[in-house]
Image (spheres, rainbow, N blue to C red):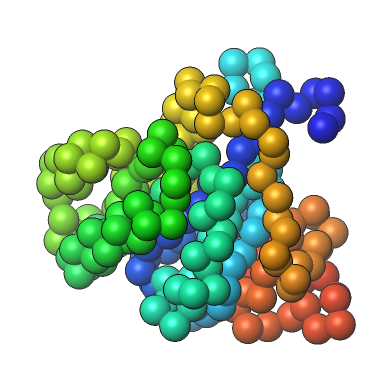
Amino acid sequence: MNKNIEATFKLLFIGDSGVGKSSILLRFTDNCFLPPEDTGATIGVDFKVKVQRIQDKKYKVTIWDTAGQERFRTLTSSYYRGAQGVMLVYDVTDRSTFTELEKWFDELNTFCADPNIVKMVVGNKIDMAAERQVSKEEGDTYAKNHGALYYECSAKTSLDVDQAIKALVSEIIQRPTLWKKSAPSSSGSSNLFSNSNGNTRVGSNGGGGADGEPFSNCAC
């Protein structure tokens, strides 16, 4: 491990397809937003890395953006292994994605053996205030009832994206039993490709990566 890196954390983004998990990831790592018409549903898992400084210490954050479609559940279940934090994302303008969080919590409890894993419920797309279907109060109460942190953000405008992930990482730091172990491994991922920015993708968006060519879905 780089002597300047205090620790490496593995975070998972889970939630229904279309809630904006990939957009949050792209905003956090590349400060970039792609409109819906320029993006496709994640196929398999996207994986990116960013070093974050908290209280004058550097932490390497590896983020795994999992597919939301049911047909990929068996593919992504193994990626819970070794995670210290999980962000459960829903769309504040689509109540069905909020209701479906119960299914995602059930999956998390099934595949994650560590009860101390840090959980955060995140309501995305708060820039679309006129179309909101789930209030902040309702989301916050739901998260508390599940022992999770709660944040709202907008991947489109970048509002509170960094703050949410920083809060998740900060809570992991406060639970050293989670990360003072062997670093999480990407073993079992036979379809990893790295682009020139050091980001790695695992069979994502169904495009690029042929013959091991580096690729990214960020056009900015």
